[in-house]
Image (cartoon, rainbow, N blue to C red):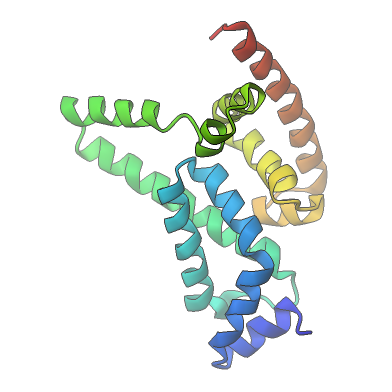
Length: 189
């Protein structure tokens, strides 16, 4: 069985059909990460697809001496950050009252996750609401570790942090998440 690094090396040599193997290996975890980043299935679908297209287009930038999975998640995260920056710039440029009120309504409508609605689980809804309120610096390590099953060293690579920083952010994130869930449960803003 070929390693991820070998597949990427062969892909650079023109064997792009091997990317299907990478999608089979990492697609489920990456899609879950996309869902957690975007919170809307349509946006997650686009981000997932764009991530794999970026792997195909920019595979030459991948360093085969390093693990593939952290690089893949970094590509995905950078794409999402770029989208967020672009959207924020457009909102500033087109900052009309109607646009702002429409955007606020759209944000409220997308706050509930599809999983929470389908499961009907009160605890899951509390968790989703609390996750949405977490600062990105705390939310991302949580998503990568608990939802994508990434070890600390890979999270450190993706977020470009020291392993110790990842550990402390995970600790702070869990504490803040508990507090936010308690606030949600008690009905306090």
